Image (cartoon, rainbow, N blue to C red; front, side, top):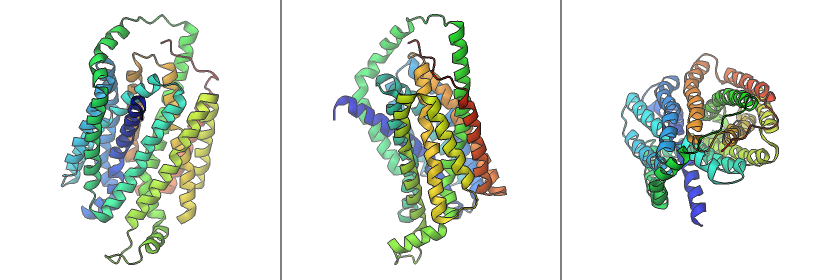
Length: 414
């Protein structure tokens, strides 16, 4: 593996860890803490909400610091900072302490998207496929959060689900620094050169088109974030509710004589969630290839239509059929992820790209955080069937908005 491949691999590992850390608690809350601490699932979600707000709000200062100082330097801060904080969070003895830990994890997690995606979208050609590959790694982090945590709950305790990735992240940060230390030192000089390049005034018609497309990007970013958060965060709980019989039978087939006399259903639910997430994440590779070939409009409309169909079909389903339909709507939810990043990468100027990605993720992750109380409220009052209908309506909003996109995007001047 050459240096360039190693660099891309470390960036991809960063995306994996970023989403893993943010969703470990989703499985912990669904499968362990509500029993261990006697706190309801809905109440536990309240302690995760500040972390998701931090995940969004700190994206903009993270992008600003990356543009002003060093993108690679900020990636080192991400790896080491989030790793140390995860280890400290594992020592929590109350929901409040977990909430504080998740908030600080959210601060460090906010670094990755504006910084890592700015590097990926600028350094390599075939932007759509590169962003999609990077996105697959992020989604495997989502999937592994359920898999690792479910396994740890049954075989060692939920705390190790924070500790082991934390140690790995710190070691990865050291490796990243060793690879990029010369570039980090040189970044200040590069930024000074970039700032001297004055941008030419934009023509009025181009500026109007840019504003129109940007409005669509940020609207669809907000609505798709509701879908992404609702599906990724709630999926372990939804599977736990709807696949108990299916999961129990699988557990008995795989391990009929458990030492405790009970089937390890948490592990099975974690494995099933991992399979759904991992298989669905492959949709991004197809989407990335199609973006480079056909552009975003047709691809985005297709993905939105898939979501509408499968969300509308989900209410009332149980066991294997529910698992199959869940895979369908996750294909749509994951498939949409690289599209807005692709459009921003094409439209945003190079020197300000991390800051623009920062704005995008402030919108995205602020909506993610606001979605948690919605999930808790809908689940407590009406159950997941109503949530699926809400998500079908959200996908319809995306479809209508994307229909107004121009065939060709305005391209960044530099």
